[in-house]
Amino acid sequence: MTHNHLIEIRDLGKTYTSGNSPVTAIDHMDFVIDDKEFVTIMGQSGSGKSTLLSTMGALNRPTRGKVFVDSLDLYSLSNEQRADFRSEYMGFIFQSFQLIPYLTVLENIKLPMAVTGRTKKEKHQMAMEVIERVGLKKKSDRLPDQLSGGEQERVAIARAIVNKPPIILADEPTGNLDSETAKEIMGLLKALNSDGHTIIMVTHNAEMGKFASRTIRVRDGNSYA
Image 1 (cartoon, helix red, strand yellow):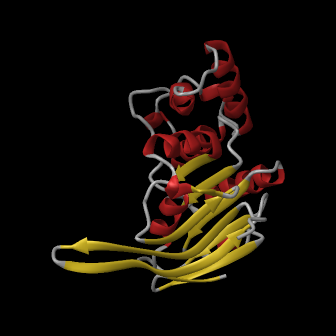
Image 2 (cartoon, one colour; image 1 turned 90 degrees about the vertical axis):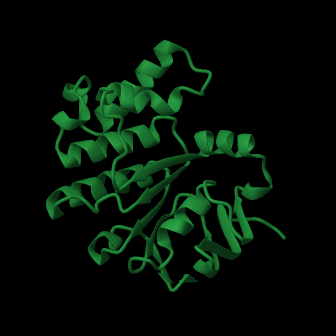
Image 3 (cartoon, helix red, strand yellow; image 1 turned 180 degrees about the vertical axis):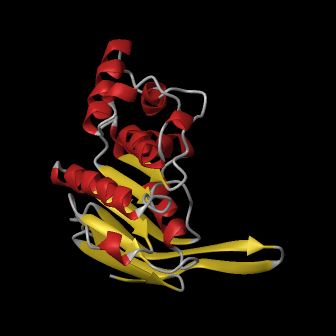
């Protein structure tokens, strides 16, 4: 097989066991994503979107099939290799922000750099650059509960991009925001895409889907690219 795409999903399936019953989260998915694309994965709640995103993000081993990123078969790697791969290649943005409440904005953003070999000075400089990028320079010493929802999402985005990963995976990043703030966050993601990041965003909101260059639809565990 030749790999000319950044991400290739091949014959993907994922089944969980709930009690004694199998539950199929992903039935069958096949698609590709190219470098520097902005792709939305759209579908109703329970359609398999979030399971797909976590599987693409090297966080959730599939029951069947392959996930290739940059020609690398993710689930042929050891757990440690996969963790290294994630920290270098991927940034994650979650709907619930997942900020550490007792750490400042700056400290939260520095978290993904803990496992890198960068100096303290480099980490600080890179963190301050992304804080400025997301418009929170004056709030770097605030705690998460001193910020609005939109500001917390900006911190989550800054944390996701601080290591300059080529791929950003976003799970309903505007789900908890009002429509005006959601548009601002989407504008920020669009700008990051223009800078060369590949962005893959799960959403059930068609308005947010308009910001992307392409949509992969998911229904009943199947993909329709």
